[in-house]
Image 1 (cartoon, rainbow, N blue to C red):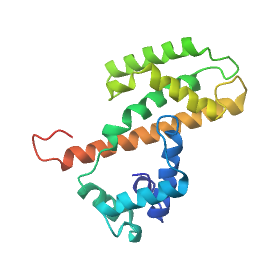
Image 2 (cartoon, helix red, strand yellow):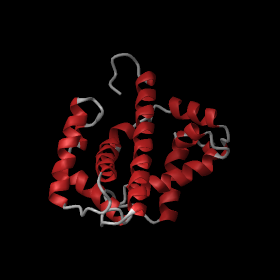
Image 3 (cartoon, helix red, strand yellow):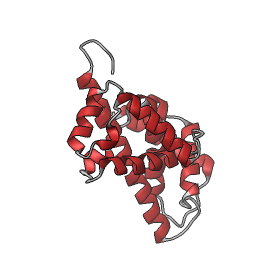
Length: 189
């Protein structure tokens, strides 16, 4: 979706880079094989769906193949993680970067914010309303040195993380919409 959305000239290379970026975002939730083994496993999985995927250079053709695969599942599987991480990143971005983050109070703040987003239908996954996922999102931010008090570089990093996660959530929504359109009537997406 990233390659299609950004109209990248080399969608295959873009897809590899995006897969590694997503792998990095989820590294506190899942155990991943090393990068070489991860790439080989991913290559094998995609090959099942489209044996010629690495020859596809046109983003529109990539989208057609993806839509026709009937394997649009990312919105069901990883969306709760990314939505929870986005709550954390946006709450961090809204804070003064010089103020310390007290974990317990911050997690309560995230919980309240997520509940409000869910009521406003801005959070699609009820599973994203999870202190455990917020804690993992905070660990991701800490791994990027965005939790300890700092000045403008911390604020910029927090905004960048929020933007990165918002883009992932937006792409997951696009995948959900494609799945809904591809499903026969009466079949849940």
